[in-house]
Image (cartoon, rainbow, N blue to C red; front, side):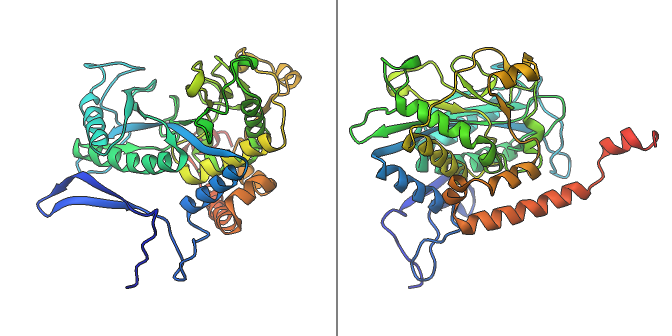
Length: 380
């Protein structure tokens, strides 16, 4: 009698693992107050609220194709995670160098049993790093899938004596893990609002304005898309992660690129997001930023097709290219200065998120790292 059942909260998941006590089940749901009102601190509710704002502008769907990367590390004799990998593989390598192939295969099989349409499963660039991509769908469902995906990956990895981590930069000197977000808007009649064969680069005015909105708010929403101290160890030059606020087509060095596919597959890929982000909050602020561009018909700057990493600072300034925040501290300060992003989150989420991140930064700032000992102890 104390439980509420709402029409849209009927998505049950039965996980294909368990023990002698039976299978494991879960439910994707929203959080409500005892009075039956949506709870302001529910990230899923935050995304749903922003999707309603999208519908008021005449769009039917906001689609997302996420690309979460993760590392697999060995467990020690006490079943605690180490930083030891079990392979020497590289990008798209197969056995015998990619010794985690069986683990990935079982993850894919379980995801398939759960109704996922897995499009790719492969070893990533760094040793011990992996990626499994699943088909795009509407943003709410895609975020639900991302949360289920993380649970499946961690559970199956443990079964194989491995620890799966979605930490942005677990190991110094090699690539970190991102979660590239491929986004598109669709209209009531099922048309991709980003596609226009006659437009510049085959993109519609809506697509160009959406990109402009993302670029305008990128510095300010980074605290949400990259929400940990460690996130900013990934956002440095030289490891494929974006550092600079710009966009392009084929070029993979800017923050945003537009993959080659057109027609219904036309999409915008934002490359900065990492898998520590809450997907619901991340997509809420990305949608709000893009829609700000669409609603105000913002014009995107020129596409940058040359490698930004090899540009001088003067060349970047000449092209209007700016940097993303270098620390969580700077990102959180910038977050509060952007009314579009803060309104997308809502006051409850904003206040609690900022407070949590201030505590996290203060704890980090007071910690004396091994790097400091190595570089300063003898020198001074």
